[in-house]
Length: 99
Image (tube, rainbow, N blue to C red; front, side):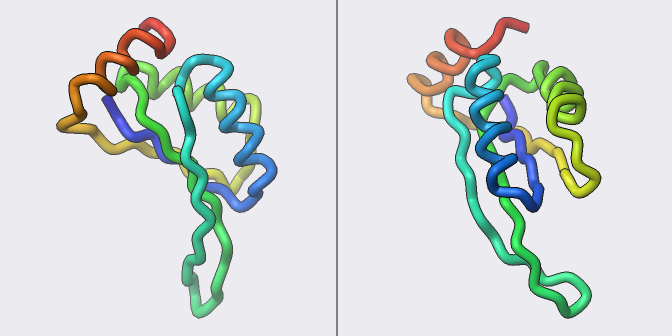
């Protein structure tokens, strides 16, 4: 399992991506955070989507997000999940898209 992260500037597009991910069974739920970042003494707003999914789906999800929602400011990355409670892990394995 991985935590898949998507960072972009447009909150409306973030909601569209979230609905797409759930519809395609790449995620059961998507968290949306609005954040401020500092860059070159400027304060910018970003939106971060994150969700737990199967590691083997990373390339497929990345490819589809780039194709369907391309933006030059989008950042996609994942971090491994080393532990997950048994019940939620089982739910993810049985409910997410087959690999």
